[in-house]
Image 1 (cartoon, rainbow, N blue to C red):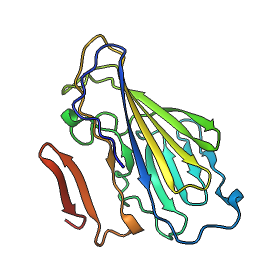
Image 2 (image 1 turned 90 degrees about the vertical axis):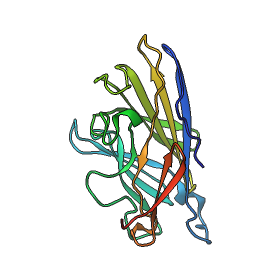
Image 3 (image 1 turned 180 degrees about the vertical axis):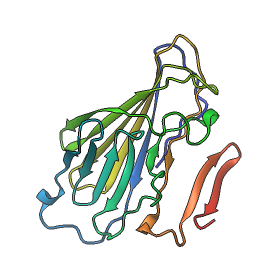
Length: 206
């Protein structure tokens, strides 16, 4: 389910939020012990290049805050494959603005982050602020994304918040990008792209 935020106008110190829910049908048989579904968040690596691992018994994500806060690995635990597109410059939750095109200024910007725990949910909140002020995207537009997993759930909840910290009213066209091969193989996978004339569908091997 995707709640799309497109061509939204907002003034100083205002924000807009959209949410993405990635729903995976994982298997028919559920594990007998619910304790296996516990959510864990791990940090590893050196300062300035730390990675985060968010996982439960259904999904394992690896997030790189130093490169746009992107998901660099997406592994359903029932699969032997990593479902993220295999090229190094690709990933999931890549943050772009339509005016800047791809890759855009936030593609490899270091994101700040904090770990979150809410009842049976754990996750991470990451954020960065635009600095270049080009192609319709002003300086001071903060992008915040929150990735949350619940205990024993196959659903990753990804929520975006855009905050305008400048004195300029803007109409951002925000377009997060997800490079994902369902089943981990590009064969018979398709690209789905929102456009001004509707949904564009392309074969992954093109």
